[in-house]
Image (tube, rainbow, N blue to C red; front, side):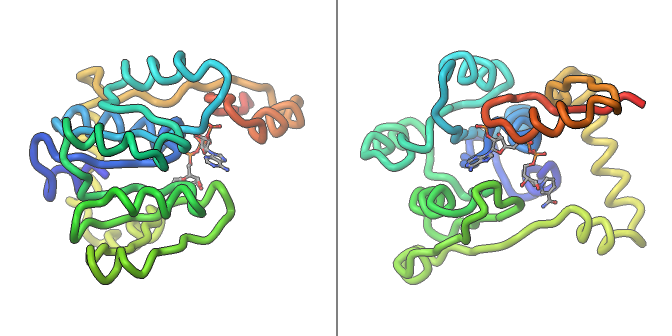
Length: 203
Ligand SMILES: NC(=O)c1ccc[n+]([C@@H]2O[C@H](COP(=O)([O-])OP(=O)(O)OC[C@H]3O[C@@H](n4cnc5c(N)ncnc54)[C@H](OP(=O)(O)O)[C@@H]3O)[C@@H](O)[C@H]2O)c1
């Protein structure tokens, strides 16, 4: 994410992402904000929606919207104040991914890195023909394998992230520490929606 934002994006560009409350989503918000890139962050509706929206805004999110809003005509209003995104980051799949695609600018890309909804990505034919959108995938493990002989690439990326961390611009997602004996509780919590914290075993 950091490398792509550094090399391809300019101040004021927009990125749209779903699963914005995930660990990945929090990192995207913070890295983008540090580079002056605007983010449109899609989350699931929930009780305490406003609190989550406030938390993501405090992290640096430009806009926080629900999956339902993503489908509504009021999105047109949003694009009066920021350009249509060049990049969509999809960690959900299904309808959510299709809706992200609808808002990309012509020639924009959607990168799928996760499939939390366990539904395939459906691409409207019109998006391919008339907007020439690019559909790609990303797997960090493969990226590391591909770059294992290029130590500079990996090191430079980690160095840049460390600079952001030291500057207080990038923090890890919230964690709940659970002892290993309580693994059932940790698994149950990890399966619940809207929990917003990682379950970390203490050994
Ligand atoms: N490709 C790669 O290299 C790579 C690397 C790391 C992670 N991943 C993948 O990225 C995804 C996110 O990982 P993470 O560790 O950041 O996750 P995480 O912190 O556990 O967060 C999961 C997120 O998914 C959302 N979610 C769950 N079910 C959903 C559904 N049915 N519809 C919409 N949103 C849903 C949750 O939303 P709520 O907040 O509403 O509960 C939560 O924000 C996972 O699929 C993971 O496998 C891929």
